[in-house]
Structures are given as C-alpha cells and as structure tokens.
Length: 240
Length: 143
Image (tube, rainbow over all chains, first blue to last red; front, side, top):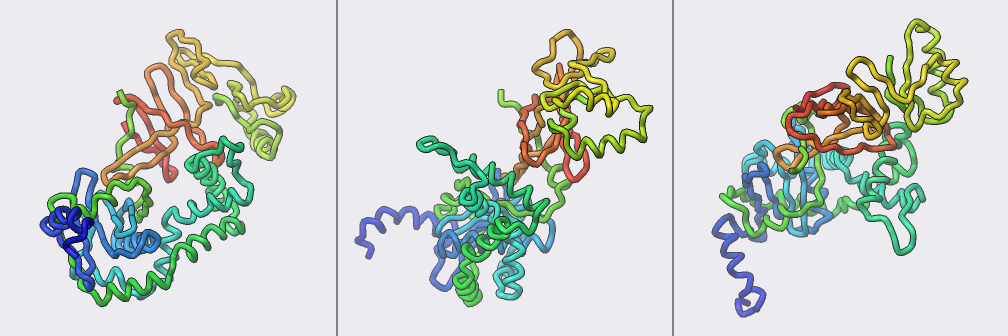
C-alpha cells in the first residue's frame, strides 16, 4: 500500500496531522479544539458526507446552545464539520458522548432546523418553481445569491403573516425530511456511542481542519439575546 | 410634526383610513409633510387629512428634505429619509448582522424606515459619525 502514488504524496500531510493532533482509527471520533484570531473552533470528523454533517453540526450546536447562551457559525465538508464561536465551546471528553445521544433526537432535530436557515434555503427552489421570484431572461439569468435574497424577503413575510402557508410548510418539510437522512444519522450516532471520542487541542490549524475553516458557505445558530450580541459587535466602517 | 416623505405607500389604502380616524382626535397637531416619491395622492386627500405639503422645509439651521441627495448645500444641516439605511456589524467568531439605523453624518442625517419588502440600503459610516441601530424594539448607540 505504501507504494501507491497517492499515499506517498499525501504522507507528509498525514505526518503533520499526526504530529499536531491525531489520526482517528475506525473506532474513534476525532475532535479538535483550536483557538485562532477568528475565535474558538471545534472541528469534528465523522467522515459521513456533507448532508449528514450539516444536520449533525446543527444538532450539536443546538444541544450545546441549550446549556447556556452561545452563538455559532457552522461550516462543513464531506469529512467533517466546524462550530465556531466567540466564546470557548464547553465540550470535553467527559460530556461529549451525551451531546451525541439518541434521546430526544426527533425533538432536537426539529428545533435545530427551526433555529437555522435550512428551511430558508429550501424555500429558494420552492419560490422559483411556484413562480414567486423572477429568475431572469434566457441567457441572462439572475445569480443564486440574488434569487436567495428575493426568496428570503418573501419567506420572512410568509413566516410573519401567513405561518401556515403551504409553500412555507413545504420548505420546512423538505429541510426536515430530505436533508435529514434520519436513518444514516441514527446509524452514525450509534456508531459514535460505541466509539472512543478523542479530543485534541492543536496549537495551530491541522491539515484535516483547514479546508473546512476556509469554507464560506456558513449557517449560524444562536441562543443569545440579540441585545447581548449587539453589545459585543462593531460597525463595519467605510474602507479607506 | 414634520414628516420627511413617503407618509403613505402611494395610492389610497387602509392606512389612510386608519390615519383619518386617528387624526380626528388631534386637530390641534400640525402635520407638515415634506413630499417624497410615494406621496402622490390627490391634493384633496391631504387637505381632508389636514396635512400641509412642502418640497422642502427649513427650521432655523435644519433643512428637512426627503432625499438627502436633492438637498442644496447651503450650510444647513440636512435631515432626510428615503433610503431605508442599514449598517453591517461584525463580531468575534465570524459573526455579522445587518440592522436598520439612524445615521448622523457631517452634512446630513438619515432617519430609519422599516419595510418587509424593501430590505435596506447599506451605509458605511466613517469613524466617529454617530450611528444608532434598532433591534428588539430598542435603540443602541454604536459610535
């Protein structure tokens, strides 16, 4: 195996990962806690694919946020996910298994979907199909970002004034059922329950975490009061 | 009471009727409307609502106008509306938020406006210019 070109090329990266942190075995779940100028990061590597990671990340963020007020920025890729916060994330080897418990799974999943933007993103496609937003002329279509902005305004109006609107409900249903892949999630949680959780605190970014950290497509989840968040923030000033 | 424009959204609607009922209780209050691009109803409607209309108003050293870009620069401080101003704020942990605001620049100020369908025009204030953001029915001074 060590003769494979891929392995030979990647060997220095694996060595660096091992030296800075750890390479998880099949019966282990690796978590890395790293502090950078962006804040406090928690990286988790379940190797289960992007969709499952998205759900799993929001579930973990939701469960942690229920213990005390905290705000997370969430990113993920095919082999892991990241929770980033402005305060230390209270997860340790002693309580980690509890956060991945199967108890109250359905209720917690439902709450975490409601607490994030997942339904809002589903609503983009729904509003396009329903003809609520204009997608542009042939050859000059609007960008996804533009469509998301338009769909978002309609989403807010439905949410505030017509909460039982069928298109709005459809968005929540899709976020919940299609994205969730509940069976896979359960399987993974069962696997984690049987594995050893390894938490490392690398002094700098590791090869595993880097691609996740630079991902800009992020979710956010908060249990802090808006007022408290504003007090910690600064204005974006005119660039000179 | 001075309004810097866009008092009602264009043509006669329910809001006009609600306002008419409310207005009856306060005849003593003077309403001065500096007309904006949405103030397009027939003159008789404003007459009935006891609203006086102006293109612009000057009170001592303050000049009231709907759109600050239309204001003549004559040493007066301009108080305006029109653009639905908002600011972006950021915090540790890659947090960011956009909120409606009051903006007080060197030459002019912009009052906030709220609408579900318009979004906000993001302004980038300079250091030191007073900005007050609105959230949770409260006002916060940001600088």
